Image (cartoon, rainbow, N blue to C red; front, top):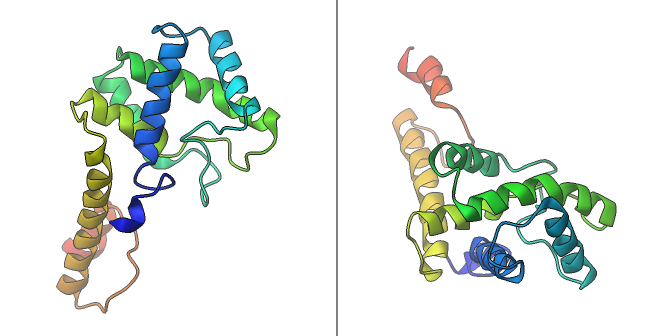
Length: 173
């Protein structure tokens, strides 16, 4: 868990949320127009800061976890102001980051969205965000260990498989 405590990992989603909330305050507490948002994003970059939640050390496209969270938010909280701003940033930021030229990956990662979801559902203590991040990782590893033991496999690096794959290759055999 200590490895998740830095701003590039466990604190990233709360940093993004804090930035989004401050951006809304700077823009008068309302949802900005795309032009107003573009100017604010350029101002952020031109001041030497980054657009938090964009870019990833490994991924070179929109983070699939971001996509899943976006689909969830579109279904369950489409009118939330923070989510609307996240969506607008998603529409505007990649082009700006590409034109800016310093970002190798102008697409959002999971942290660009997850803090807004937690805030919406009442998790208002930023200190819990890293814990939730860690718990999700622990659950994934535990699921992998259960399958390893069930199949008599040695310890291994976790590999992602779908439920459909499990049904076809394990349950239905």
